[in-house]
Amino acid sequence: MADSRPEFPYTDFEHGDVPEHRAALDDFHAEYGSDRPDPKRLAAHAERVRAVPTLLGPFEAWYLNPRVQSFLAELNTGVGI
Image (cartoon, rainbow, N blue to C red; front, top):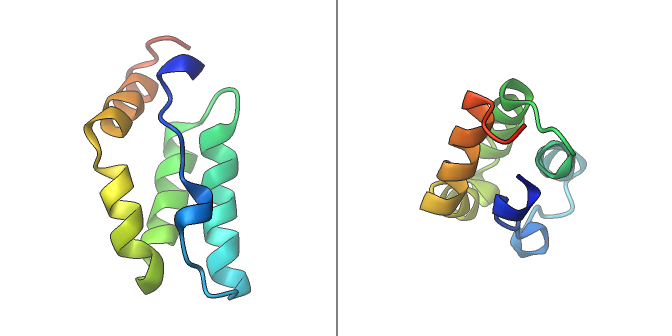
């Protein structure tokens, strides 16, 4: 499954050096990059990232990418885990 995981462009996101914004991004990044990402935790972290105006647009552009959506669908069905 790791081979099908699209890269998360962490350094492309501008969090404005606001600790809460960085924490939202860090938590999503850590869960996404874990050996067995939990779909529910990943969704909760994604919602926190979406709540940050400066992260919303770039994050959604990446998140809605068909390759990312395919990977997330695999997580939700347990395929490859």
